[in-house]
Length: 190
Image 1 (tube, rainbow, N blue to C red):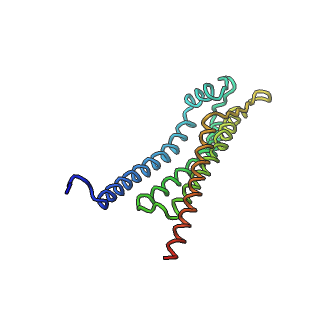
Image 2: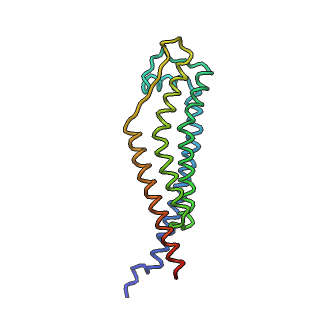
Image 3: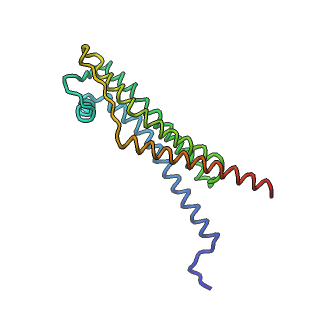
């Protein structure tokens, strides 16, 4: 008898412990990401130099057109919460999903629901992020005279990737929900 091989039950137990540990780490990282989003947004809008640099480098604004007064920054900060709220919702779905995984509840209806919501949030982020930037740029130029206000709308591969991943995760959630329903029906027959 070979004693170096794990028995099926010990191997399964080891995999479950590994999944629980990974789920704990993912939940911790999602918590850090949420706190980072809250703190990072506040820091970004409270630091005129950083804000001016991003507005010029990424949003194509000239230094002369940017208003960095407190009112403009506060309005921009408020508009930036459109995509931030969507991202916080997505992070909450990850937190909840991996809570199920931590409890070894893989095929219940809860994980499927959170996967669907995560997919929908990523798809919503595809629209919320460029809209939030557009409104933030408008806030930074709103105090300018007519003709010097700016709108910025940009779509890139980030939005495509967010839409694609969101759709894929949404479909996986729907499939898992159907599998959970079928497993529950089969369990009722036995």
